[in-house]
Amino acid sequence: MNDLSMAKTAPQTRFDVDAVRRDFPILSQEINGNPLVYLDNGASAQKPVAVLDAMDRYYRQMHSNVHRGAHTLGDRATTAFEGARETVRAFLNADSTREIIWTRGTTEAINLVANGMAERLKPGDEILVSHMEHHANIVPWQMIAERTGAKVVPIQVTPEGELDLDSFNDLLGEKTRVLALTHVSNVLGTINPVAALIQQAKALGVITVIDGAQAVPHFQPDVQALGCDFYMFSGHKLFGPTGIGVLYGKAHLLEEMPPYQGGGEMIERVSFERTTWNTLPYKFEAGTAPIAEAVGLGAAIDYLNDFDREAMEAAEDALLARAHELVETVPGMQIIGTAAKKVPVMSFKIDGLHPSDIGTLLDQQGIAIRTGHHCAMPLMDFYGVPGTARASFAFYNTIEEVEKLFAALQKIQRLFA
Image 1 (tube, rainbow, N blue to C red):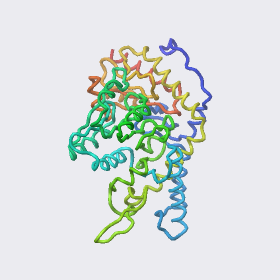
Image 2 (image 1 turned 30 degrees about the horizontal axis):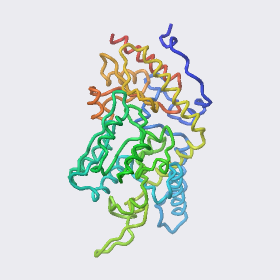
Image 3 (image 1 turned 90 degrees about the vertical axis):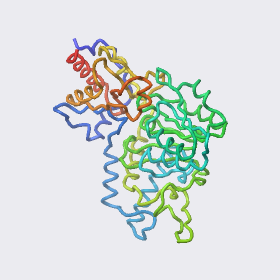
Image 4 (image 1 turned 90 degrees about the horizontal axis):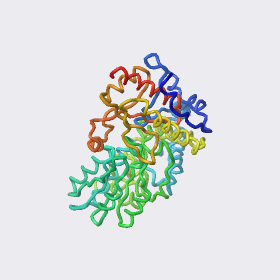
């Protein structure tokens, strides 16, 4: 009898995953003689045909630089580019497209905000981050703290992988100037209660910065409901192209911040006596824009908008629930992060096995996961491990693929046992 047959059958949802999978050509291939099981979505998600077609159509029919071309192709490109910005605005429920800045990704967006905060910080000021942050939401703040004399202060996490709210309450105070938190942990899958924490911080006049890179693939944030000052995410994790990200910022704060980079597009007028800046959002978009990438990201959001998002989320919840059911079928397997509210991310270790060995042996069976410290070394230190194996699921994954993962883990465990 297969070990997996002992576990309960996962509940069915109204979500047609077979139809969805046909939209993702890359999923139909074989790896090492086995059907690909792609479970590395937290690192980068795959792209639907709608995104591939939109970018191909842009290059074939409308490629030109935007905003200043006095010709038809320039008009087409500008319309598509700014249309994608409006799509992102609606996705985040921002008040205006002036508040939507194109970046290369979440990392650049955080660096942009951190540099913009430098003028607000002075020696003794505190920047609150958490122990579960990606390095991209730690290192930029450390760099700014070094420049300004401010201090980066970590909020503790619980053994279950949730923010320690007592630690947060103790640390938030009159010295706090910035609160920088991940909406969803890339290692633990924890969904943090950012709306409540933002409300507490705003009562003290604290600037709030939310890393949404791991949140947006699984649910749609509402920046006005959250009340945050800044929110950012990366296109490639949202089933869009690489090389593009989004920074949402409240207009009045963006107006106050100095430009992050200088050059074309971000200027109003240049002279050797004085240069003046362009209006929002272009003030922060120096150089040639990622036009095709913006079009692709807009297409990714349009694609997601065609789905019943509640059914999509229920399908993902079923994947994680099935994975958690099957943990007991692999001796020595331990989940890292058991928060009550999670997206479908499962970090784990298996007694006697190094995470990189697990990843290599799974790849031989056609299963792609991520191993290592996941750009979250402080969190690895907290759990006392050098790294973990991480399976991160998306709405195009299936219950069968979850079961294939665990059958493969059982095989690996027996081999090394």
